[in-house]
Length: 317
Ligand code: GDP
Ligand code: CA
Image (cartoon, rainbow, N blue to C red; front, side):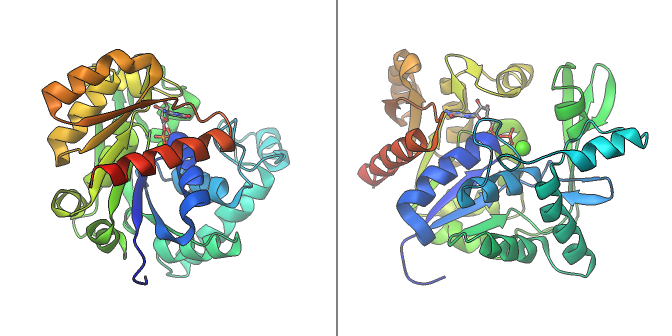
């Protein structure tokens, strides 16, 4: 890392990757994306890192923006063939996407660290900024539901986040550390931005990585979050349901409250439809609010939101 100012983004998959793509367009190598790996799993014998790949594909421009995962225009011949061979194939990996997962698995089994593998793939995809998985250690999320315990992907993909969630455990290795570069990036960034990612499934596991929460708390960076909850609902996935299940208010206010209690938030970006929450966030939480259009339905809108988030963050210094 050089002397240039850095902006750190904490990111999950779809919401995170969209804001990451917007910020990358504006910041280039001044951006560092720290990505959740709590939904990593071994599928078909391959080490899959769904959030890392979603970010890599969004930054390199090959991702499927609408779908929010995988490579645009990918085919699924391997997946279909697995089905014909009698293998359960609800976890879909496209044929080109498979190449990423094959390479990752091969390099990991040769002893390389996940962060180095990610860096190598990022370079090969032409990405100039750093994309760092939160840790190189294995992290395993189990979702305990009304239908019993299941792996994260079983809950999220196979069961489409439908079963009622009772609790979630994130198993971590006792000697786990944040991946190289994570703590440094957080400490020396001028802003730490929390993407509009699932606070419970994507952001909390990053913050719970050893040393990360302390680094965010003690960093001199301005801390800003973008709400993944718009009009009381998640645009995708179960963030709203889970927040409710965990006793949080499923709203932009609830997200702001969560982060402000965890590490002291300076600014919260909320959608226009939630404009009436701004006063409550400012007065009850003492967090400044930016109200804007937060729907990143395409890259242009993501860049527009990113530039507003940056301007807002800089105004809070
Ligand atoms: P996952 O890892 O793929 O589940 O994705 P993330 O954790 O990064 O993001 C999930 C959250 O992203 C959901 O709660 C969505 O509401 C939110 N999200 C997705 N797209 C957008 C968007 O364009 N704008 C905003 N504000 N939130 C979004
Ligand atoms: Ca995810």
